[in-house]
Amino acid sequence: MKCRIRKWELSDAKDLAAALSNKKVQDNLRDGLPYPYTEQDGKEFISAMLSADENETFAFAIMVDDKVVGSIGIFRQGNIHSQTAELGYYIAEEYWGKGIMTEAVKQICAYVFAKSDIIRIYAEPFAYNIASCRVLEKVGFQYEGTLRSNAVKNGKVIDMEMYSLLKEECEWRFCYFG
Image 1 (cartoon, one colour):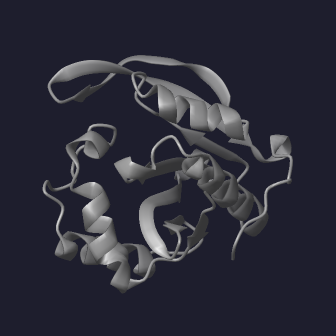
Image 2 (cartoon, helix red, strand yellow):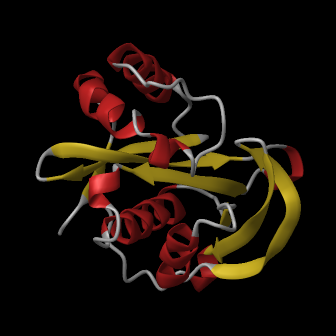
């Protein structure tokens, strides 16, 4: 199943709401998202992404067959970490395990490394989210360690994993859609 990433459009809000109004999806994300997630919530998120500084926030819809099935973004950090950025993503449950997120991560990393001065992209998936860890490994991210008792999610203290990809390690075999 092929996917592509593209800039958000306000008309994507309905598909975004459908993907995020799923407790299984939200259980793998940081807190702060409304549940259920409404079309209006989607419009507010998309508006924020469209108005964000394009050199600080790289936010895209994940598309399969002209339908938004998820979201992916890379967010520049500040101060001494200004050339480092955090990767975050999610995909609708019915698209799990199909290789879509692996392809989307390849596309966004290639895009950010080509279009910015970012030298390191990192991600911190929950340790129990083995599928997310596997996505990062397939793309070439290096496992850096476990962040022990690093978060509280759904009332439970959990570990997170630290992965990173350096610009110099990127094989540039990935293509991106600009």
